[in-house]
Image (cartoon, rainbow, N blue to C red; front, side, top):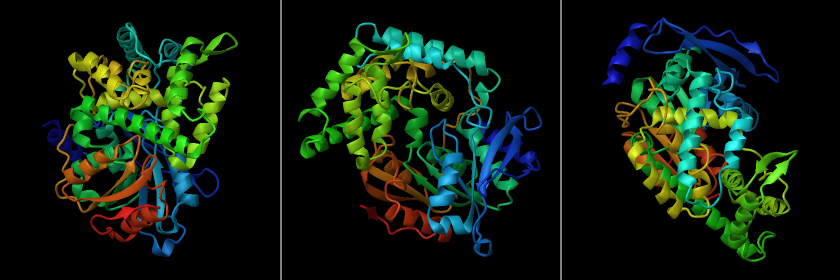
Length: 470
């Protein structure tokens, strides 16, 4: 009901479009700042500045328009993705589109959210462990409350207005600001949810939407414990496939039994954490957090995973670093804005996740709020009501064909969620990549990349039931 009211308010102020003054920011890229309403329900009120980056099309005579991109997160800026696509991405995209990204509100150059300091956040991780114990839930609840309170204290003015509905509305203003009659968009991971919400708010404003690594939008927004359990299981499954590979290839980690070696490493680090200059650095929980991130790079990086696990046994290397608070502050705050977590289910749901994913689950479920599926302890105690929560519908009635890409071995956005997204969208069309790692485009630049490029440039969809295997 709020969606209809807000749509009417916004359309009444349709002339409020940011004026973009692009300036050179090196290597052929241009940067700009856009002013948009802090609260889209009060479009003439206070403004927030959003940072944009673009690279103009290299073949202006064949230019289609702008291609807006978002790499996901939530909490990730867009600059790195814009620069990658505009220098190393498919030639068809570079030639025919201005590649454009804007950091979502609360992220990067768009008034970044602040919650705890890095020291406060790291010390909260020092209380976590890879195995649950009698105090795990109470500690997690306390750390979740402290994190949420810090977000309110440091970012009180911004906090009610982060969330995906307002990001989607910002994007429609950006579309108009660059002069495009309709939106062409490529979203990955959480970027698929931005695209899904946009498609439901503005179905007639779409030229083409490619959504890679899909969220099941209804479970994400309205049944978040169910959604998160899928991610716990997907990470555990991906780690199991790494262990199987490690045994088959006789990799350098684990001496033939990598699963037991990993559990031993977690427990050893919990008993004897890494400390530098008197300060906590890493334990079994932070090891697990950092490992889950590496699994997203797919099986071409498994040799490196084995190597850094050996490094961790020697108490050094890339797995023994502190989780980064700035990214995870926005990651948590946006998801707490977007999702409705019933508080009364919290204890049971965390216990289920820990049982279903016994190697990786407890370290993340009972730690300070961290990544994606590990926000419930903060979200059930979130101190503000979001003005930017979109709860449906998700069918995007009236939208043109939308391409959804799912990866069967994705540890971050499970394949079944892309299947669900493609079927939820009335005009959804599924392309499947059979492989490991997060999303399809960056794992299969030949097959998936070619088909995404053909769709975005010519609006040519792959045949129904198409699989990519490269």
